[in-house]
Length: 501
Image 1 (cartoon, helix red, strand yellow):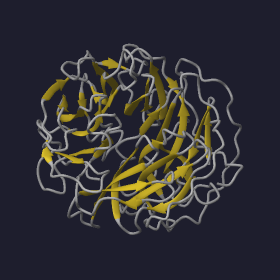
Image 2 (image 1 turned 30 degrees about the vertical axis):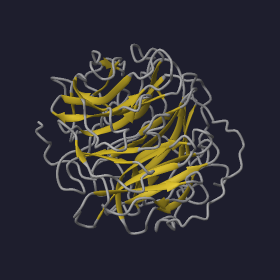
Image 3 (image 1 turned 45 degrees about the vertical axis):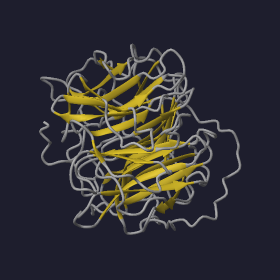
């Protein structure tokens, strides 16, 4: 299933063996990774709900070998195991890693993460770390890809609902995620954020501390294997508002989490630290996508810059996320209701910056409009985040949308999509032909197809848009799309209640 819009094409990821929609399931909260040695190979992980009438979810994933035009959805990491909060990453050799929260069902009696690895482009996965050995709720992780002493180390951060019972935690693995060292509490307890590494091996954590409070915390010794990680820099960050949970646009979830990323381009902007979040400005009931940067190693941060350029204070700009390209360009995407008369139907928007976020390009809509309130899997949200990974020419985006209509429920349903964005516009990817990766002989989890993967939707063909996207936002509402079938196979205080996986 594909959804074309103004020269951009969104390809559905959670599809059956023929590349068609699976009727009756739900998929949201998606994380994408790209093989840096071969951009044709990508993997996307998500929360897979086989039955939208239940809140039971599993660790879904799919892979592509042709730059996102066709996706294979083999199944879930482990059948009938409750999983949530998927995060993926890749190392410099093209290995993929999948961090997944595990718990019991129907009552969550623990919140622990385990890490999985794929050496064949995401086709199969092997569990690296023992169950209940690390992590917690709303975890994120990164890999040190620098040439320093911490090369290959993995770092994860998570909130206080964790495997160890207290504190906002930080954990390190020095052996590729096989084992994780004892957790260290992060000062000021930043949550709902991410972690990254600069070219000197310093580790930076960005997150929310309640209200309008955000923090950037640094560890300069986490890269030293013989030392217990400690945090030697802790900076308050002004993002122009506060993180919103819960939000009217995503009733049981975040309006967007905090994203931190470091520039490792090697140029004039090298080691700049960037933070972005969809925040609620003072006196407002809707969110803006706000951005700040640090040019001095996280000691100070710039005045916040608003990326959405519509100037509308009554519209939602939510699920903001971004990525730093190897050449230093910044790509940001988010959901946006500026064109919706009902102020809920959303489109994916895109903007980029080539000057370290001082200025941003005119916003461009890159997807059809969708209703985020439909297709809830017995949990009133479409996840808590979307993700993008950039290369030198564009960004690879994984997002959830409700383009497909489920006649059995008389509403649209949540699915995962891939779209390519770039400063030059969208269009069909043009991958370099490569041989399909050969599975390794390492023992792997045996994925099986989801229980509802037999039904397919009947779609009406629509003409694919070929126009190059305009540099300015469309001023009129867009109609609900009908998906096009593929032609080929394929503070502090804490919020109450806290979002659970």
